[in-house]
Image (cartoon, rainbow, N blue to C red; front, side, top):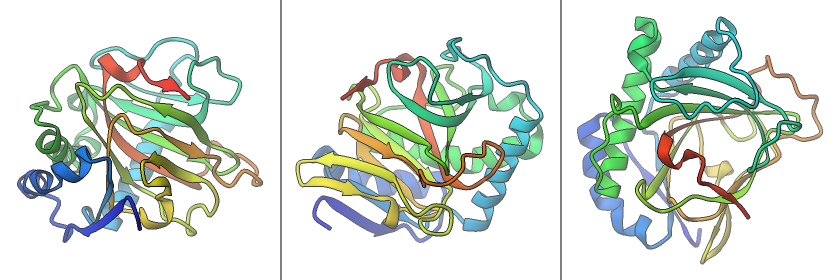
Length: 246
């Protein structure tokens, strides 16, 4: 597809492997192409991780709506409905992990197994040197539920992150069949969801406009269901609030 590169990553999932892959992908990302690395992580592991994160949220108090979560070392989850005041309209359930060492050993271990290779890939492409222990770095899961989960079209500042990574924890058609990621590139709008399956990592230059079109909007929204689109991303606290709606 014009503007979209799909590359097999061989499911090795190690930090060293991702560092090597990132060095090969750097120019593609800088040129504004969207890249999907296929089969980076085992499907069964990510399905278990998705359920574990949801279970963790069910045992924690919901972070108050309207209160800023851009706080270092914070582990939280919050349900953001369509009526929540925000500069960037959205409907999703977010789970943020700013201090993995405070989690129980089981969840902490599987989070490291995915987040460390992702961060190695980001550092390799962007030429940065972030660590998961940095107060600036947060691991975040975003659940866009069937029934209208979405994120308005927006843009991030390019620096200092340079590249965005999205690991998919959902499959097109199996978990949702309408809506999903749209990237507005020089090659035109690219709908990546049909090609971005569980275990795949998508990379994009961080200042490319993108959105999540409503997920299965004709269904009934159920915040307790796993149905819908799940994504795992890495974010920097200093730039989290600097995204602009388009």
